[in-house]
Length: 118
Image 1 (tube, rainbow, N blue to C red):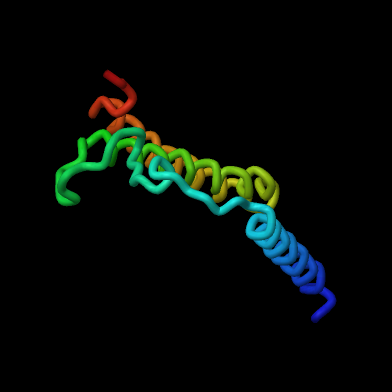
Image 2: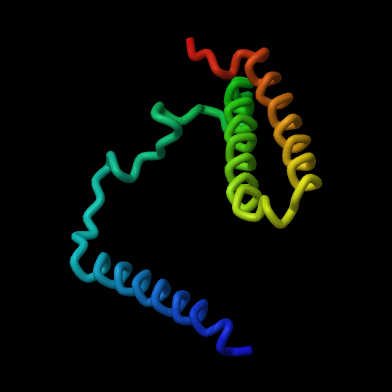
């Protein structure tokens, strides 16, 4: 059983080693000096708000929903396409239903104007 998980453990070890090595190189060779511009707060390309409780434009949330729609679509389409022979007609119908639900969300986004930038 350990033979099946050994490549994953090697991958995690190598990835962790590379991460630690890169962090160590950054600390060793980095200057560490930060000016006022680098230490200033930064929010979405403009100066921070006066109050953290101000309301955001609804388009911010619509773009987030749009990202989730396309992210879910891609995350589920690749494994489905690979195993299409195995899942058969039921898999085809269930994926068509899933994509139909995502299309409804996309149409909602379109009607709300999330795709138009003023």
